[in-house]
Image 1 (cartoon, one colour):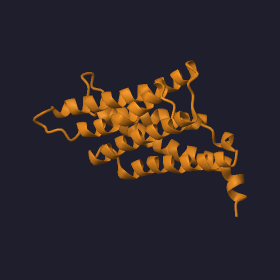
Image 2: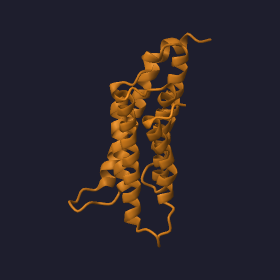
Image 3: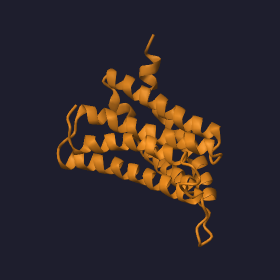
Length: 190
């Protein structure tokens, strides 16, 4: 495992997961409930920034590695899963929606790994629909974490709920897209 800045940032994102979850379990005497939402959102934003930054730096510094390519999506999926589980516990996301999103992430990760083993990873490379799904999902999670209405009358919970349902639809659509791309290899297996 090469120790470089991009891999360090990926590890930092993984370390932020228990910190993110712990914020919700701090005693109410230590932190105001509105502050909990703010700090959890800030930690999630920090994780998202490290996700962008580690990829940028890996390319800019020519520090790409097989280990980094493996660990980066694992860190992403762990952070999203942790956020969704917390949001389900807080009753801000329906458990069925969380299961759709988390289940798709596991299934498509396994599909990509299997296709890479067959030398067909280009068939299930990230598509535009996958990027659109990720954008809707991340925006929804941020809004649902923040949760509290803002002074202008904007309600992050309403907007986040709308976006998480859009993300769930895009999740199923992108899963169908990737399965269709892999179908010749799937059908050819005995």
